[in-house]
Length: 160
Length: 307
Image 1 (cartoon, each protein chain N blue to C red):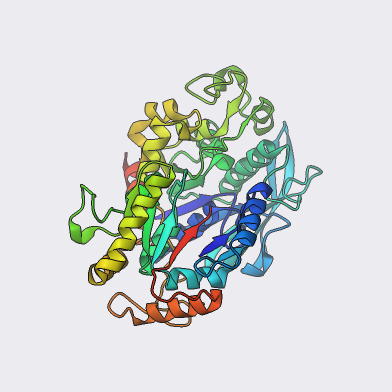
Image 2: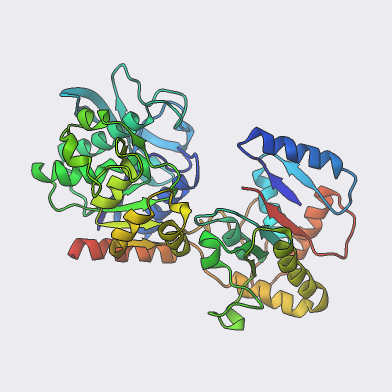
């Protein structure tokens, strides 16, 4: 399932070709353009969300995915590093704090290996996959903590 | 605490990118925590007026010094989904904010240098003395520069500035004329490497660099992005500047709005669910499959985001 649009015309054309090519494929659905209602339904209905960014200062998709119990599979750039912790390999978080899958290189094998690990877990151990979903949902990525952080910064600069 | 945000966007009334969401989301959280927050914005002709409640004139004759003369401005005020916002409208032939777009004009540097100046002038003349001024991205990079070089001496000596960078790609690099327009003047003084001089073009001014150098604190939108900006080419040439000011530079993760993005109350999804009860999620998956009419029922579904 893919939903989106690009500001660059050439990218849009590329995906239109892709859509025509994949039109009869029962496993793939491409929706080009902006559709707010569908975007909510995708977050709510999907099992996993892939965020293979080259550049992502903060990134909202993975945070929304986590809230909706959709396991994020992300590349380790920008804010994705600070929000998604690999189920198999994360060094800094206990197993019960991990919430998704992370890959590092920007090539197909890296992406595929992370997706394979996620899909394997979904197939082989549905119970554990559900655990992973629930661990992700327990994270609080609302404005609650950022608000506190900014107030600390304000206090610090006021009294410096 | 009394906080004023000066920004070029605020969702949903003015939204071009993530900046707008942050300005609105952070302001609301700060108010929930018992602070007073006001937002100063340009009064664009093309913003979503249907998201402003109770728009009225707040300050009729604001004269903003500009090129040795002064530009007559009006300041309007209204509520954007509960947040108090002030909109600055200049009355002169440049029509800075009546262009049918937010960004992308050839004189963007001039437009937002003017906006930064007008926002400070509005604070000064209307006797607003916030504890903290929070400004965002290159558009308001000159706010701390003008505050600490000029407005400090006119009765705004106690204000502190927090500067947040959402995107290092656009830094507001331009010529000397903004110095003369804003009344900062002293070319040789600002064209120094530790002030506003661009790190690569010695004949260009860099607004964002000014924001970093002059602010009391600088943040970007996640800790890892802060590291990337310092040590990789994602900093678009500002890496060294950030390194010099590393003691006041930090990454703070953005939040998302759990009133909009929450599977327990989301009005766009057919079945609500939460962490304890995931049945609704399975139902939503069915609904998503029906909608996209894919037929296989026994495989995981995954979504891809395209930025």
